[in-house]
Image (cartoon, rainbow over all chains, first blue to last red):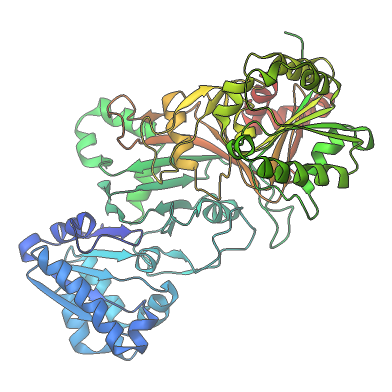
Length: 295
Length: 295
């Protein structure tokens, strides 16, 4: 599988859209700065689907934000059924985009409306072949992975079966992305997925914060919060197979990393120097390499 | 140092006081059930110190709860200055108690008012020599350890120096106890202490949940939430020495355990069978033994 040329900007929701806009600024920068051609996709929003005035409000908000940040072109696509996701004008806009940004709402709308359509294919082509940036906030972030969480309660304890999973848009494998992470106290619900399959890496992204992934090369954290990475690969014990659905899970020896803004790990740069690279490798136990390898 | 005969009941705040009272019931049971002589200490509460009617309300609440649970005797001590903590009647009540329960408020009040007084000594004697149960909820829980957190903000990111520490009442060493843990999203602030000294084990107790420690022998979790144990002993990286006070911390490879109600680890029982004991040892990486050894 050829390495994608694109980048992923995975935003935990609630990103600043009117002030410094640090997270969105990084998205525009990666998409080419003053040459950026941005497509905003409002598919996740039920409200945008049902109320024209709400759709317009979302459009105005992001259109203004991306233009303020210097993007050359901003096109908003209000795509809310599969027929629209096959229309030539929409496909064309995505094919010409240097960045596609998915707004928040419900991730199952993105999967069920876009999944498998010409628009979906165009987004993957733009990402893989043209080097476009795929970004998403909140539901738009969760949808980026191959397996995604659906909406579920933010229980304060890990509950077996509490967090339904579904196939996502498939830009990154072997991870589960949860958003509004610190704000909604979602460590426990992410742990419930880790208990189910510790091979999956849990990624919790705070509000106004983004995990930026350059496949095969680099991850970085941007914004005001942290990215919490939950690695169950060394989980020594869980009662998962001893309790029933709805019961509380126990987990031990789960590795957690808290990565604030400014954190960056560049595999390419590290590779030039064997010493630091080896150290970095030891530090992250292969985790970052795994994440970078699965995009 | 001779092993204490007592037990510790470390409650994350907000325990049920009127319904099933699962957490308080375990406290009474450990204190002797129908033979229990319970002392309730309201020192942590500024309100109890300043308003007689509030002091009475707290007294009535716990008095009723412990009597409903079958305790033989319940004595409430409203001790709000160091002179009161030296009075013979109070010391005598504690010396005769099978359980002392510290209510919530501000943990620095417990340390500064009780610390080093005859009452403090009586509590330690009752715990160590007579096998009394020492319990505390919220601030009363945090005060149980040798080093305690003071009140600090529940930042959503780990901030260097955000969580002030102070000497606590000293019933358990090498741990930091935080309370209202899941409810107030305190993982990040606990991580800030782990970054400072990874030798400290972080213990986050949810509301209506207790960690029960029988020194040298057993830990168990009681109640409706979980106990989160944060072990930084294998922390591979932190930027602690590269950032200033108030800046955001990065941490990697912190081990986290989520232990729900019903979780129990009995070192004594495990020791009878070398096979399971070895397995249990591997599972918890020596962590539980360390916790049990430091009481």
